[in-house]
Image 1 (tube, rainbow, N blue to C red):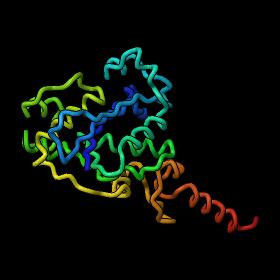
Image 2: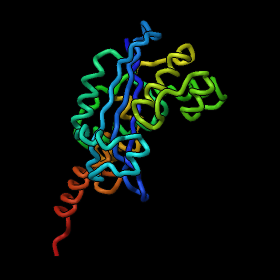
Image 3: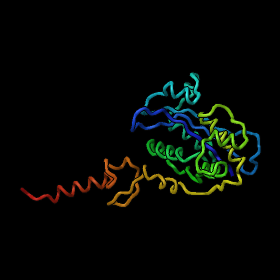
Image 4: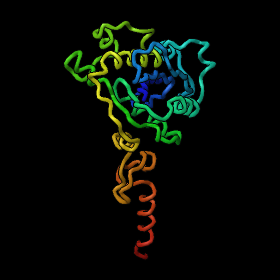
Length: 234
């Protein structure tokens, strides 16, 4: 079974309420039967931000994206499908912090892409941070340095960060208990994205609600229709 350590990079947001968009997916597979293998199995893809329309210069500089890399940018739907195909069937998904899981959920929901691949997810940051610093959260670079590992490449590239995180997992494998879970367990953890309608009691993506967390659009429309039907005659 593999451990797939992934990292995401997003566009900069300049105003409150702006939605960060995934522009890079990076990952490294670890064969848990032979974690010390020096053979690298990696994935890297740049994706086009639909809402922003382009990857700005400031963002490109931050993630170390070169001008030539712009030719490799693909639509997010294409990039995520390539990533899912690369994952295979039997794996743990691991990341440094839980924000990237939420980004994947939000983007897949936005683009209508199934989330049945988002299984066996594990945030490995708390266990390793607790081991090294006695607290549940550390910066990736600090954890790498305190572990006596060499920082690989340029940080804030999704692929580089995934490789550094994978090295931490290999180093501290005994301290990290990888757990299996279902895709549905991962969606339900995202309360900001999935709300439960108070009428039909169904859990739906937030876009199914018309500005209110109480009733989904379908039920709200039904309430309005019922109100018009039962209105007293003048």
